[in-house]
Image (cartoon, rainbow, N blue to C red; front, top):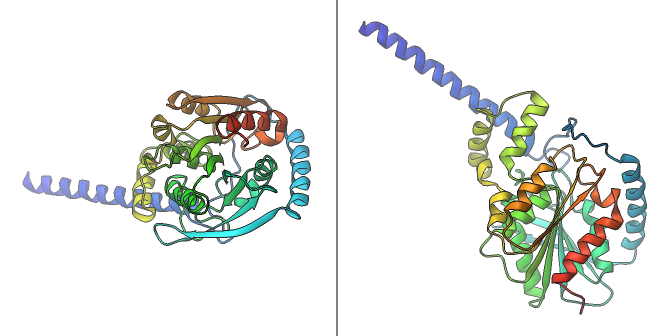
Length: 330
């Protein structure tokens, strides 16, 4: 009997070791797949699957308006005053960015934050609109993106600390600065995660989040199902542990939803109803949870990060009506 018990315990122990090993392997695989900077300098995997939204994305309108905006921005870049800037993160990474300055100096600023696998260049169109309104615009490259250093993508959670440093740099040069934060996709999650920080200076007056997600675990749960047809347990748990060991954070703690619950910064929530990456339902969760003054804009026919291109008039009217109610022109 004792011999059988020992054999059974040995088998169970062996199975547990194999299971833990498999979970560790899977966690590392998905971490490398989604959160390690790739050789092209941006990191993460290309996305070739989508969520069924029930709404047809107006791709033709999006592409036509984006081409027009890109042409206007290209001409603007020839004349706008700009400077390359950088800072050192708390963990020793050199982070890069660009400042664009208005014709007449002011104390109005925006930090425009890009999304996953993108770079500061993707925020130039939005930055141009702010500068034309008399704002200084800072477009940083998030860690592990663009010209910034870093091997692991922060998904907004590590980036929130970096944005606080960028805010600090602005205030060193302009103590009277009144600052807006405007983020798209992962950049939107980043600025929402910033909003819940106790150390956020009062100089940050308003936030615009465009198609951000509620939390990192929910995004990865959706991606596991869509890309691989896999359930969240135990892979999300394994990924979270690996993420903590390698990048310094659990996916479960990286929550924009929990941060906006603590926010006192007025926030405009924007989402396209044809978003096939971050479900439009997430914006309602975020809006309902936000403790600060808030407004919401749903852009019909806009896919992921496409609201400003599908309906630029509605987008920028909503943005500046909201932003300038908290940071008025002098």
